Image 1 (cartoon, helix red, strand yellow):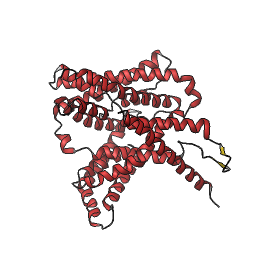
Image 2 (tube, one colour):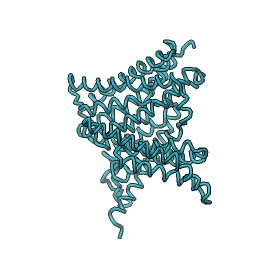
Image 3 (cartoon, one colour):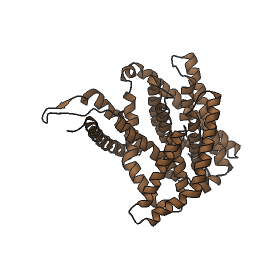
Image 4 (cartoon, helix red, strand yellow):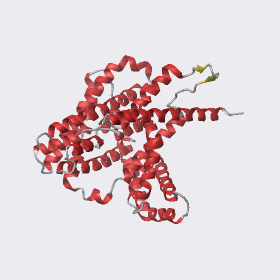
Length: 416
C-alpha cells in the first residue's frame, strides 16, 4: 500500500515537471525578445499558480479516472526545492566574487556602491513611513526596513548587455558600474543579515555579535581548512568528487548560518566566496551552474511568481493600490540609484555626465531583491497581505526597472 506522504511526493514531482517546462518555455520567449529569462520564469509561476488555483485543483481526468494533483506551490516539498534555489543563487554569487579584485576595486567603485546602498535604503524606508502616515497603506517600521533593503540591490545583467551593444562596457563608466555592483551586492547581503533580527537595540547588537563570530570562525576555518578538504576531491578517484565536497561545504555553511540566526543564504554566500578563492574552483563552476540553473533556480522564480496568489481574496480588491505602490517604489528606486550612485561618482571625481551614466547603469533590480523579500517572508519579518503586496510590488519593480534602464542608458550615452 502506498502511503499518503509518498503520494504527495509524486504529486510534487509532477508539479516540479510542469514548473520546469513552463519556466524554460517562458524564459525562452523573454530571451528571444532580449529580456532577462528570469522575468519569463516569474511569469510562468504567475500563470501556473492561477491555473492551479482556478482550473485544476481537485479536477478529474475522466478518461483515466484519476484526480489531478493540487498545484500547491506552497507545499513543503516545492518550497524546499525553491529554497535550495536561493542557496545556489547566493553560492554562485560568492563563487564569482574575487577577493583580490574586490580589494583593488578602488575608491570610485566603493564610494559609488556605498551611495547606491545608503540613499535608496533611506528613501525606501522614509517613503513607506510617509505612506503609512498619510495614506491608507499600513507599513510597520520592520516592513519599511524590508522595502528599503529591497531597493539597495543592483543587478547589472541588463546594463552589461546594453553597454556591450553601444561599445561602452570597457569605458571608465562601464568598469565603475561593474565594480560597484559587486560591492553593492556584498553590502546588501550584510544588511540583510542584520534585518533578519529587526527588533530591540539589544537584539540588533546581539545579532551583530553573532555575525562577527560566524564570519570570524567560518572565514578563518575556511581559509585554513577548506583548501585541504577540497584537495580530497582531487585525490578521490571518483567522478565529480570535487563537486560533491564543494556542495557539502555549501550545505554545512548554510546550516550553521541558519542556526546562528543570520539566515542560511549568508552561509551559502560565504561558502561561495571561500571556494571561489581555490585555484581549482573553475573545475566546478560550470557543473554548479548546470545544476542550479538547470533545476533549482528556475523553480525558485516559479515559486516567487506563484506566491502572488497567496491571498487571492484580497488581491482583486487591492490590485489598484498594489500597482500604485509598485509605481511609487519604482520611482523611488530609480531616483535613489541615480542620486546615490551619481553623488558617489561625483565625489570620486567623475564628471556630471559620467556620474549620471553610472547612476542610470545601477538602476536594475533582479535576483537579490527577490531573495530579500522572500527571505523576509520566510523569517516572518513581513506577514499577511502586506507581505503579498510587497512581493507583487517587487516583481513589478523588477519589470519596470528592467524595461526602463536600456532606454535611459542609451539616452545618457547619446553622442558619446
